[in-house]
Length: 466
Image 1 (tube, one colour):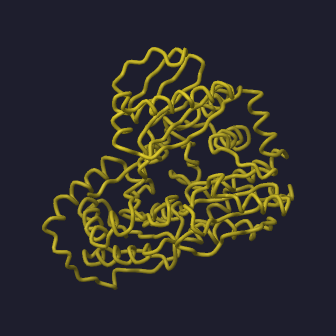
Image 2 (image 1 turned 30 degrees about the vertical axis):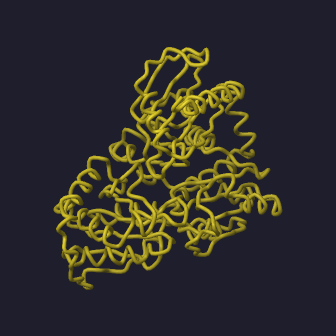
Image 3 (image 1 turned 45 degrees about the vertical axis):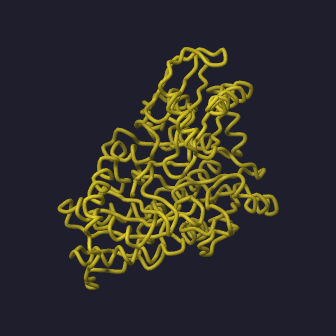
């Protein structure tokens, strides 16, 4: 079975992800995308074991179909592939990556000609085509090397960032930053552009390691322990990090404290609206902090709420409905750059923001809360089991008027179950789209309310089967 979730097809190598499945899925993509464009197929890969071989296999299948292919000479970040697809007018982009998942995972992200993650209606067609051809596909093809061209998407991507960021402001502030690339594809991208612009930068984990030092390459507080030590030792103003394929970010402040992505997203939105002329719509997924809404209201910006999955923002960023998009799992997009999330851009914007404001992230957060009120948000997760899945389905079907003494004013069942309360707090339970987990989200207008809502959310699942 091949299934595209919120961010592509993903699974454990050798079990869900095999070479035969890769070849068959690529053929299904070519069949579905046939005639979409005369441009090349852009294929990339991350630093994981077998990712490069998967990419070469995909190129061989595409070339056997007479499809021109652009294949980089090394691993590339996801936003760089998105940029290359748009720049080349490609028929599609394929990135072999396990993203932020553990080293044993791999997968495939599919990009449209606009450089956005493929929407559900397109990936559904790929799945259907896969099921049609898989039982009888002989898996025999004749590669045509003349159709495969090596290319380097790095220079034009970094040139765009070079023009977008206010480097003079950062230099004048004299900031010192520590960067943790987590052995991923953003190495020699984020660190290089900072160094080339004269920013004092300390870099760690900037080599290729398919096992990511034994951790999942995710920008969480637990994973960024080494970065925390470096920020303290070097007395850095910021700690910056990107995940395995560079489309997510992690931020530490000058005190080496991890800043929740929901807060960072709101601060960047506020900065862009006040200093960079952002006036368009703001996208937020169901599971993202309503602090985004509070900032948008203050600046008179319209908020569009979508189901979970950054792919839902793509068309809206392309057609101008949205100028900024935020996803709680450290996803940020600014239409001035790409209609796709970019962890490298996010890190650079945070650096520019701290430089321009002349304040620490902690100070900026306190200023923001003094204007719009306090929002306390966290996400946690539990292993996905059949019992908990059944319980979640039961909860979705129930009518909700109140929970724990709080009046429910809105119920959303588009992606799991989300309850919004009269106080402005909310909780959400949903199945993860990229790993076998059940996500638990809660946000309160005070620390006390947050703790209460998180307790209620856990209790709802904890009563499963009773």
